[in-house]
Image (cartoon, rainbow over all chains, first blue to last red; front, side, top):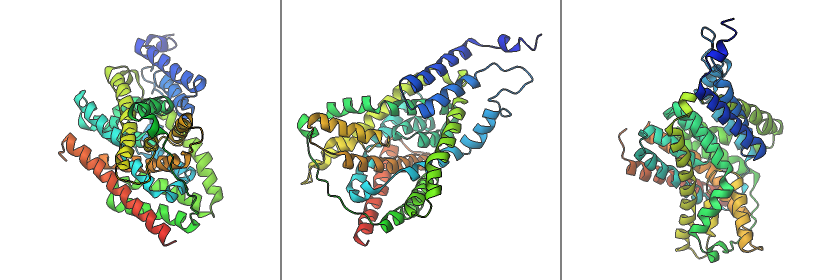
Amino acid sequence: MEQLLAGIKNLQPNQIAMYVIGIVLIYLAIKKDCEPMLLLPIGFGAILTNLPVIPGIPGIASDEGVLGILKNAGILTELFPALIFIAIGAMIDFTPLLQMPSMILFGAAAQFGIFMTIIIAYYLGFNIKEAASIGIIGTADGPTSIFVATRFAPHLLGPISVVAYSYMSLVPIIQPIVIKALTTRNERRIRMKYKEVIVPKTVKIIFPIAVTIIAGIVAPMSATLIGFLMFGNLIRESGVLDRLSKAAQNELSNLVTLLLGITIGSTMTAEAFINLNTIKILLLGLVAFIFDTAGGVLFAKFLNLFVKEKYNPMVGAAGISAFPMSARVIQKLAKEEDPSNFVLMQAVSANVAGQIGSIIAGSMVLALLS
Amino acid sequence: MNISLFELMIYGMGATFFVLILFYLLIKMLVKFK
């Protein structure tokens, strides 16, 4: 009888609070369509991991439990984030970037939020490695955030992942506000020339190989993420591995996302999640996205001081890694200001550059603080 | 490695720009010699 009632006896009030948080995440995923692929498994994982533990029987999230085994094998070894990058690489078409290479600069400028957030987080009381992990939310790139947090602050992995994915789904709300605050109507109406350039297949094949070698030499910390991203892209562009490319885009992506989500949820124990730090991370995530957008927009305005053919500053904001959502937001804004203005290709180009830029910036933070 | 926050920002942003400019030059070269 004692054993049968052990679950009820061991139930803590903060565990009940985590069930509510888990249900809220599931609600946001289902009803509000906020990154459902991640938030739903994370929410359910949070509920599972906070179920009461019966003394003498390993809990589901303990080292002997299923979620504990998945965490040790897939998250702490950085395997899941790395595998996700193969899938992302197989999904990304770098052609717009190869057609408009100057857009790659926005992929660097829009990482500004990372560094501003690190500084603010540090002054809010986090140590430098925790602050760096929080700042990486500014890559607007979930797997990179998970990758860096696993190395520098595994105890903050739960809140960092949830905040990163939540704000990514809020890009359509955050970016327009920041863009409108920093640009005039005339600037938002700037038209950019688009000349369709045919990129030969050879270039598309050499690009991922060359990028991997260059990144591996000048930024060795990026080798895992850039290497796996470009491996996925090479499979896509090779033209001889269609089956593998489709498997990476569908089966691999779906399976790893599913396991990644529920395993991240398992790090959200009540003790690790219900505290002041989570609220601070929530605010810092917003800071990161605001400064990322501002960095891209202001850099475009800066470039416009020197170039003949002006950049629409909104395109700079697409330099964040939230692909392809950010590019769509920029095109929508451009259309609102001038229904005949078409900047989607430029925005997609900057957005693709942001994918590379976020990994490089994340790797630089890892290198500088390791 | 001891590094100030200011150095982290300057080196981090600088190095990110440096690597992406290398990629920019790579793309330019690839497209030129296609």
